[in-house]
Length: 244
Ligand SMILES: [Zn+2]
Image 1 (cartoon, protein in one colour):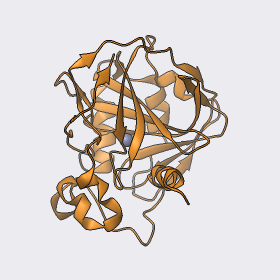
Image 2 (cartoon, rainbow, N blue to C red):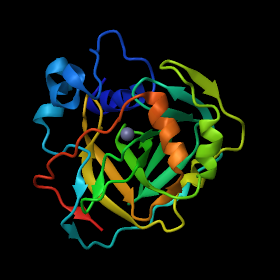
Image 3 (cartoon, protein in one colour):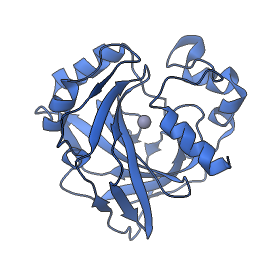
């Protein structure tokens, strides 16, 4: 496998039980984010990387960002509790096109509270839509949730949320990730990494500017099911710019 395929394998492994060779990581204590780089040699980028995610988006640079072309089908196939997050694995054939590059949606999952911040502001929940192109380059569309009315798609997904790590459940037909996106498709763009080990870099981050709604009870159900906050702390921006 070349580097890009390793990156893709790592991104998709977020959805499965940790492979036997990889060491245990988590969000607190000795397994927590401050120790990820030391837990396994494969996680070295978590400590050495200079383009790590998440970040506090700030110091924006005005840019003529191209509109996202979203060709999402109703393909939410199964929901998994992998012990790190709640993830929905997606059927083939849903595409994101940006800057002439096409990426296929593989899965989406959630973090509570949000991992990225915008101008210092943290949100109660953040969704990550993980896409890969034919070369294995990853593009993550991030959606911020603010507290308000219950989210209709989450209501359907949470009904099937497996209570225990390792659990999975099939989803009913007809559920599309498109129902999770805000009406306004403006976004911020920067280069970053996976926010979980192995923290691989070269990931295109596209953060939707407009948040969508989630109820307090929906956030609580997610957090209680996982049993911990699953947000990596924000990382230094270093030499990067955030385009808006
Ligand atoms: Zn994520």
